[in-house]
Length: 286
Image (cartoon, rainbow, N blue to C red; front, top):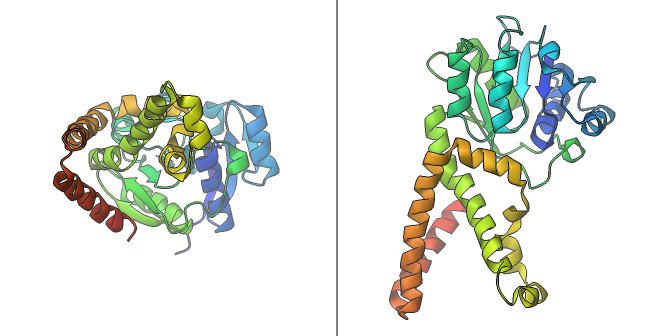
């Protein structure tokens, strides 16, 4: 059966929310899309680009009569939004989000009595930029999109959210919210913190100006993520702090061993460590 969702409300039409709207509309899954946000300029860009059919600033009013509500705001804002909008959509409406921390939001939905209709979502795609101007209907094609149903989730709501992500061209995986958060702590959140820390460390060098003059692809590539929005990532780190701190501690222990190998001139140990890193990088590259 072809999936068609009559009225979708996207709260937060930034890079991810806007791209999901664009991909869903192009696939014929989203019939009418309402974009909601605080910034008029961004909403007008979304409307002009054809990402949405109408715009508004009041999420509580917008979700009345919606068949699907997509939370595309920062993860900490989504927790507050759930509280505000929970009583408003119809009992048949489904809800999802696009954030990179799942357990707090899914458990909040359960606490509000809407755990059966809310199914967390997280596309493993994005970029360092934000805003509707960067939205791309092809952003999710060939990428993985994770959906995180719980024991309370109604099967029709899960199928709707799965179907939407499938229509974008993504490979859809299901897993428990807590498992998702532990995995992305290693695959996404730790690399982000390492990039920030590396850029901050090198930037504090007494010879930082000379470093910039001599900077090549190595430092530019490894600090690419350091250009990401601070508010967004501070919120992510706070909400996934236990899993992320655990991975950061593991990184610190490993880094200490690398430091000892370098400090002691232990070429054999260093080669072995680099070899293990090379092996995992080949796995990442497929």
